[in-house]
Image (cartoon, rainbow over the protein chains, first blue to last red):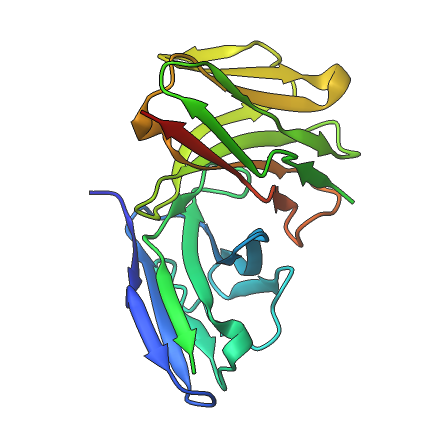
Amino acid sequence: EAQVTQNPRYLITVTGKKLTVTCSQNMNHEYMSWYRQDPGLGLRQIYYSMNVEVTDKGDVPEGYKVSRKEKRNFPLILESPSPNQTSLYFCASSLRRSEKLFFGSGTQLSVL
Amino acid sequence: AQKVTQAQTEISVVEKEDVTLDCVYETRDTTYYLFWYKQPPSGELVFLIRRNSFDEQNEISGRYSWNFQKSTSSFNFTITASQVVDSAVYFCALSGFSGGGADGLTFGKGTHLIIQP
């Protein structure tokens, strides 16, 4: 089944403790991206990647890192999480930029 | 810079009513793509439609229809004979090349649609 898999689904952590949210797609998509969703703000892009080893900042990249060493994986790394990073995170992929996005099921992150 | 405006933050209607969700966009591009996504209460994001800027034909899919008007920069979404299962947050999005998100993809803030039985 074609899908974008994100893990974990829920995560509670404390300020400053490094964490990684994994994202994997099985559709051989070139384009992948991360979004955060906050009430009243809609979806805001954190980082995106056009292909392997090609990543770039979105609208709200501060406090996040990503890597794209393989085409299928695009992990989101929070080196030192802070409470303002408490949010619902979505990974997405598409065949190419401007094609329809396939979203993962989301990761609800709480930073205490 | 490009922009997507969904002015309706929340809409509440009674089941079987028709409802239209508005989406107005701004872009300097002549080639761009417009999208609608649905987010039901379970939280996942589901693709509904993609339309390119050269195709102004209206589209109908069952009870859903989309009205694309370049003259007013709008891409409105209508649900006919609404059902409780249509309750969700709906996002309009624009993919262009000249601004907005760093890769040209901009989402509206979403419209929360509530269908009351």
